[in-house]
Length: 286
Ligand SMILES: [Zn+2]
Image 1 (tube, rainbow, N blue to C red):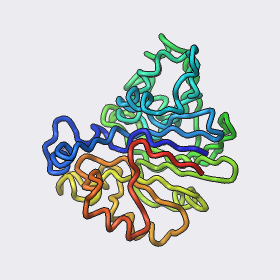
Image 2 (cartoon, rainbow, N blue to C red):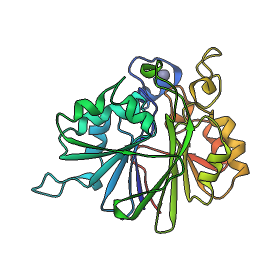
Image 3 (cartoon, helix red, strand yellow):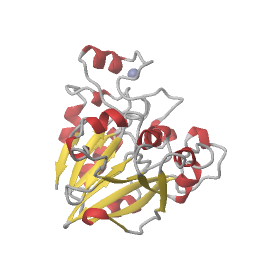
Image 4 (cartoon, protein in one colour):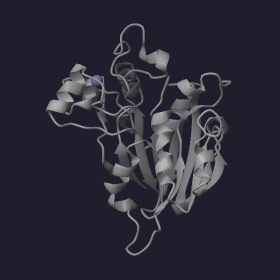
């Protein structure tokens, strides 16, 4: 299995265009940039699936050699896109794939519903390409091409702000990918280490965790991380220590998280707990 981290920042990227916080300022000074969250994953190294599609997708695809079309063709090795949520930073980039001949889109029924009503992205796209909808359900494995198996675990019912009027449902999930006996879990929106999540990571080789916020009060006391559906990194560290085995990597970093910066002192805490921080472009071969 191959996993390419396309982007490792939360919505807005890091630095964020309108933000002058100390992390954004330091990132600008050091020429550090993290693009918005997404992955490419392949069971056989030939057939790839995207997980989430941000507005940075075009630049991410151009920077990824595995995703180039073969010479003199318009064929692409991307067979489909899976969504972990319906959030704008995870889905808006789908519009940038409208030149594809067809697109297989995997998400929960709730996310598909949001993307055909409140934010009718899939409806718009169907004027340009053939979109095939695949519903994923909690705990039910789905076979993908290239020998890849994926199983979703529902994590929360957090709704994107644009869909706040919708009835809540299965809106945020993690994916466990398996191929040839190796496994990788992707959980960029983790509200809690629930028993279901613990089951999802059991025996995994690598787990990519929600690194949105380093601390619970990073956005100020009125906007706690937990209130936005994110378990802060510092609160995950003892849980990581209590669940040794997988390699743990934080991703989906908000621009306020000091871990955005490669030399952040806070990184020592993360490493001491047995984890690390993913970087844009990181390639894992399991
Ligand atoms: Zn900032």
